[in-house]
Amino acid sequence: MLNIILKIQGGLIMAGNREFFNRRLHSLLGVIPIGLFLVQHLVVNHFATGGAESFNKAADFMGNLPFRIVLETVVIYLPILFHAIYGLYIAFTAKNNAGKYGYFRNWMFLLQRVSGVITLIFITWHVWQTRVAAAFGAHVNYDMMADIFSSPFMLVFYLIGVISTIFHFANGLWSFLVSWGITVSPRSQVISTYFTIGVFIVLSIVGIRAILAFV
Amino acid sequence: MSENKTVKFIVTRQDSPDSAPYEEEFELAYRPNMNVISALMEIRRNPVNTKGQATTPITWDSNCLEEVCGACSMVINGKPRQSCSALVDQLEQPIRLEPMRTFPVVRDLQVDRSRMFDALKKVKAWIPIDGTYDLGPGPRMPEKKRQWAYELSKCMTCGVCLEACPNVNSNSSFIGPQPLSQVRLFNAHPTGEMNRGERLEAIMGDGGLANCGNSQNCVQSCPKGIPLTTSIAALNRDTTFQAFRNFFGSDNA
Image (cartoon, rainbow over the protein chains, first blue to last red):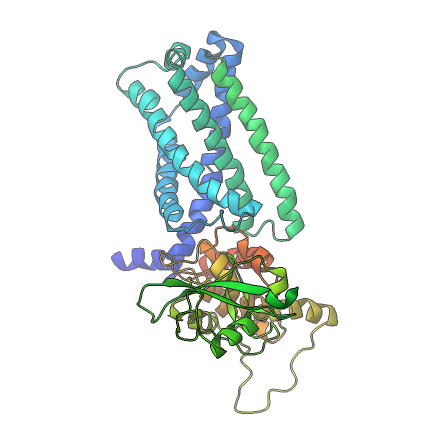
């Protein structure tokens, strides 16, 4: 039995290919499912612009999905956990040199790492404040968020956190396209730069509008 | 007027691989068309620093003196480049010279670049043609492809791309852009292509291709204008397919 498991693992992760596998998994998970979940989350939050009732309806729909805990674990918790832990390792093995080599992509390289760490801090707090609170009996609704944003500090913290998360996703989408060999030529990489800037701007508008709807 | 014109250098020196680096300043008479190498040679003739103290001549590496061998690479005014093609007239003064610290420093400006040659062996950057009998002429290469491949073959293993890369450092085992682009060169060759899987497997190993973080400093810094990031992206595509072949199996060899 153990023999068979080892054989499967050997086929999946060739000897010494663990790093290749981990890096590619890290890149994939950032877009599918984490990126898709982020877009979905921002869109659902945007219901807040239609008033408290509109948001509560959407939040209740998401909160009452069947197999909720399974969906959360497979689509959100496990992928984010891997992405965050391996991402921290990646971020801290780099020796950043954007001061010396101030090229656009090198700044994006640095910002991707900085935004990743900010996003991790933000998400940890956000999960604690909403999902963990819900597990202890709090009700996730419009009033909960309006209460959080009654503190100006929290409002600024969430604005920074959301923008940082969206940046990390948009720029990560650009490097996902390179890492999987989808954009190879310099021209395709320039076009995908403009495309991902568009993704960043559009999602930022959606995210900021949703936050301000609670204020 | 120009008789009193001088050139000032601040050189980061190091007496042995393990000793602490220190800076030493030199000032020498300006001559027209000086490059950094000729200035270092001038200092070697009379190794006296600006304080008037006699010192040891500066150690550096150089060979061809026409920017094709890559040996004389060093960090000049903050950027890694070849010292033979670094013209004093085009440099801001004082000219700062430092070794490329990504590599082990042997002495002063001389570094040990052997990790790049080891990497070329690791990725099998050659075309196996040896046999016990004459294998014949091999497949022909289209002229257009040959011209394209020539650009990749300009790599002189100078180490500038590794020095500029934020992911090549003492915390990481990343082999860097230089050997990766050579995999693309040898995989593009009609005979080399016969062993493409072996080279792809080699760069899918630890410290390989996947460590690239797309800062793209390498392509900005390469003195030969080699499209290093295009090579890396193309290899990302090739290794994606190779990984699928490894996992699912393939009826192609």
